[in-house]
Image 1 (tube, one colour):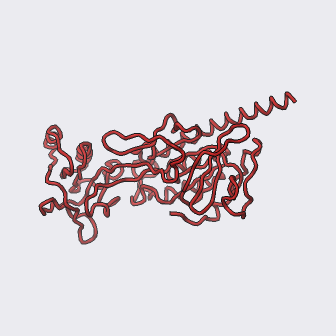
Image 2 (image 1 turned 90 degrees about the vertical axis):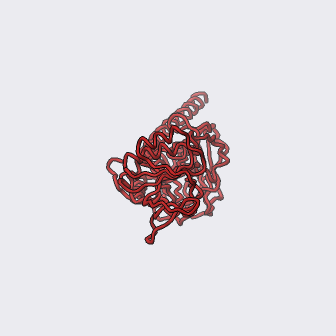
Image 3 (image 1 turned 45 degrees about the vertical axis):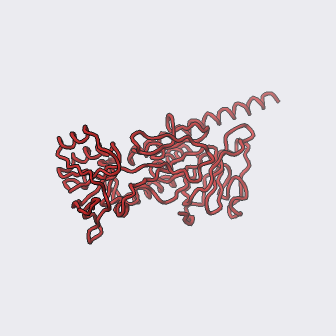
Length: 362
């Protein structure tokens, strides 16, 4: 969803590319998108695509190194339905919206800019005269940014099993992670919607938190070893198949209706999702995608500090590490931001050496 720009989103620190001979873009107030530099200034050091924990922490590292940075925030974080963040020291129970707003304010404090909006196209552009990389990023509202490097922290999209009535409970009566939500549903009557063999591990994880666990096998054949493990741990297994999820009068989970009509009462459901990296508008970058083991979905391939095979593009957070919670995602953004700054430092040094040699030879 594209939002209007806020007053504190329209000022940037002076671009540090001036010393490299790059021309500035449009002056503030000119028509957006008419020049590669965008109306907010000249060539930026970094555009961060994604305003979650990974993107904001990456931006924080960069702005504290006096880099010019814009964070493009689509405003739809994966954990928006959750009531609080868990397992992150110093932020236990903090509402996700509050956590992100604090992060945005910290980035702004050091001169970074947060721009609400959706990216429609990000692509490599012609390099500078001295060969430094360039990328353009277009937004749905017509704005265009040009940057030397990109950090992609767009997160992922969860694909739920196609069971009638299931999706409405996502983030409340329907959870997926024992570390994110497990303590909050301890001792409840928990139903595991098992859609693949890896779901049995999920059931065993939640068994640590409740004695009342029922596995509803749906769409695959359960092996004997899994049946034995469930039996040994006192986990009930139903292999009839699921017809729909039944809601209570107050909108919560009431139970699971099996094929044939029987309803098994449950108050909490657990389902493994298939995860897909958010790449809308990023297709032209050509980022490599790989499968995640266990039928969990896909992720963008990356190496040390989130560096990708595409020169000048880094990734951080769930887009490349689907199982990462808020803490690890923020840490990955920090590492990527530090690495990007280090690469820019070397590029600046090489440009300065080349200019020095040219002056010396004149």
